[in-house]
Structures are given as structure tokens and as C-alpha cells.
Image 1 (cartoon, one colour):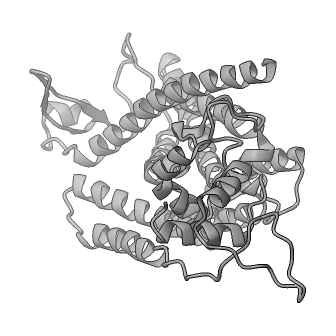
Image 2 (cartoon, one colour):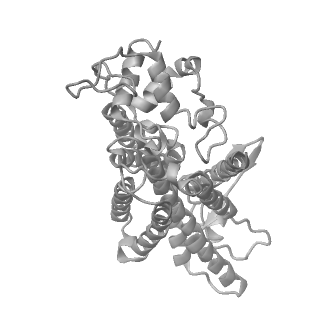
Length: 417
């Protein structure tokens, strides 16, 4: 009972922190989309106009919520520091902090179930957690050093190299952790780069601009340029990170043998689609980018489409004796009692009204499989997750065999009766 109450409390903590993470992420990504759109949409004032004399590099007019707005951007800074200056930082900090908390609640608290797959790498809990945390540190360090190097002055080449680095990280992680944990840590690594940009570059640069104005000095425009570069990087990271945030619901991606390559293609598609919108806001319509992005997604969907399960020979029940010749004694395929026995041993430890698997207080996704009627009700999900995708059981904690998966497939294709 104590263990169940702890797991139940963790479920509630997971719910509340996930809610906070979603809210903060919407605020941060929304601000990123808006300000990149604003930068790309403002138009320079007429030469010699009052705005040009004030140092305004661009402005636009917009209508929203029943009012007119006239945002203006200064080339470096206005002549005088305004009394009321708004900063955009807590959205980023709250998103990262809540996301980091979720790593502990969902993955590190139950690393044996959520991070480790013995078929991938024989790690213990602390080794898996160390891999996860090390990924965040190494990812930010490499990215920041590349940005500060001479390569940082060549945005296109820097973008290609960073993409290859992220793909390499995905390859390594999918060969050390479970596919689901590998994906989420690639996302956490990118998210750490994004918040590092805000904390270590953008906000410090803005503080230096403000401090120079306070002491009557002319602000150095280099800080604005560096902040702008990192802000644009964050904008391109957004769509890949958003996909990774929801990827844990789609085992067809992270459970595939080439999961790292699938993630690489989807990240590329997200960046291409984001690039289209950034160009469009600047007045350039390059339809080739979204076409390429959609084509990549379509290619992935076709490539990982599940194949029909081949018919299998009759398989005996788990407790059937071997025949004299050493072969398994034949028994009817699609026997419900046998299927229930497999599901009870391999799936219902989590998927039941009172799970016995440590770390689970309720059935994941509300799917319960402890009776024949419930098994038949969820036959489609069982077939998809256990047979087609082989995404369940998580990290194969209950050691389901290929023969058992094949038997479930035969039972399903025979009508799941």
C-alpha cells in the first residue's frame, strides 16, 4: 500500500509538472515565434523621417484584440533608457526547470523501466542516469564552443554542423538507452542549448546594453548581434523539440530499429518547415522548403509502415511438454486461455486496476488487460504495440519472447476471439 501511495503521488506530481511545462513552453515558443516574425516583418522608415532620425531601424503596424499597435525596433538602442522595460526570460527558465523536473519524475525515478533496455545496452540505473545528464552538459558545451569559434560567423555551415552533431548524439543515445529515453534526452539536450542561449548569452548581452545606457555610454552593437543569432537558433530548434515532446506517444518512431535515423529525418523536416515561415515573414516565398519537409515526413511514414505478420505454425501453451523428438507439441493457435496467460505475465503487471510493477499506481493510458473481455476490447492496441511496433512491454521488462509476440499476432489476425 505504501508503494502504491508513493506511485500515486508521483503520478500527480507528473501531471502538475507536465501541465506547468506545457504552459511555460507555449509562452516561450510563442514569444520566439512572435519576435522572429517581428524582426522579419518590420520595414525601414523613410530616409530623413523622424523615425530615421531617432535611430529606428524598422517598424510595423498591426491590429489585434480591438486595438492598433506600432512596434518599433532601434538599430542599437534609443537615445534614452525607458523607465518601464520588459524582459523575456522567465518563460524560458520555467520551461527548462519544469522539463528537468520531469526527467527526474518520469525517467530517473524509474530508470529501470523508462531508460534501460537490456537488448540495447546492459546498463544499471546510475549509468543510464549519468548518460542522460552527461548528454545535457556535453550538448551545451559543444554547441556554445562552436558558436564562439570562427565557425559562428558562418550561420549556414554552423547550422549543418550542429544538425550533424545532434544526429550523432541521437545515434549514440539510441545505442545506450531505450528508444523512448533516447528521444527525450535528445530533446532535453536541444532544450538545454536553448535555455543556455537565454541565460548565458541573450540576457547578459541585454544587461550590458542597458548598463551602458545607464552610465551614459554608447552601447556596443555586438551584444545585440550575438543575442539575435542565438535567438534565431532557438527559433529553428522549436519544431524539432515540440515533436520530441510528444514522441513518447508514438512508439512507431522511437521503437524502430533505425530510430535515430527517423529522428534525424523528422528534425530536418521541422527545420525546413520553420525556415519557410521565417523567409515568408521576410517577404520571400520559397515553397520548396515545406515541400521538402513534407516529403521527408511522408518518406518516413512509408518507410516505417508495419508489415503484415506472417502466419506462424501452431505453438504450444507455456507449460506444454516437449515431444520425444525435442519439438514443441502442437496446440491450437489463437487459444484465448493461452493469450490471457501471456498477457497476464507480460502486460497486466502494469495494465491492470492495481498494477504490481513498481513505479506504476494506475494502468498506463487507462488500458487494463486483466480479463478476457478487456483483452478483446483492446486487441487493436495490443497488436500494434506488442506485435507490430514491439514497443511494449516498456524496455521489455517482462521478457516477452518473439514466439509469444507471434502467437498474439496469430490470435489477432484470426479474429481476436
